[in-house]
Length: 133
Image (tube, rainbow, N blue to C red; front, top):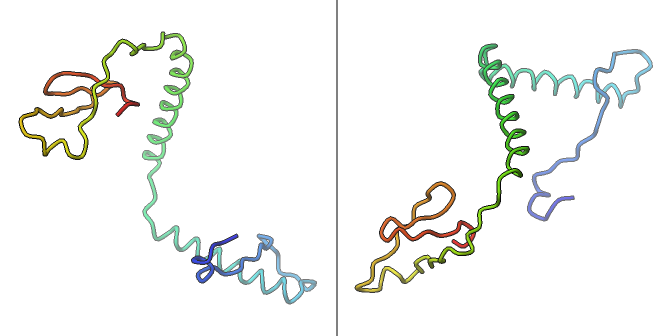
């Protein structure tokens, strides 16, 4: 449930019913839980009120961006299988410089840059597959 480091900062939690109505037939235990739950609700509302809230225009704009992003993902999921896979088997694999490459004198190092979907050396223009880096 918890590791040896976190047990010093955890407290037991009791799940209680929300929105309990005060009545004469409530036990002392349930009344205690009701008061604690009401206090927790008030503290949560106060905490929410302390933070700035998005305007209706901002919420609408965000919802629109989310709808567009979902539509793009669905479109990509349907269209990507129609493209042939890129075969890089004939491409020469260029080794990345090791930790000690800078210490070698007289050799020109690769300067790898991300270009579209692969790595390209800006010095010699060799390319590298992304998974081989």
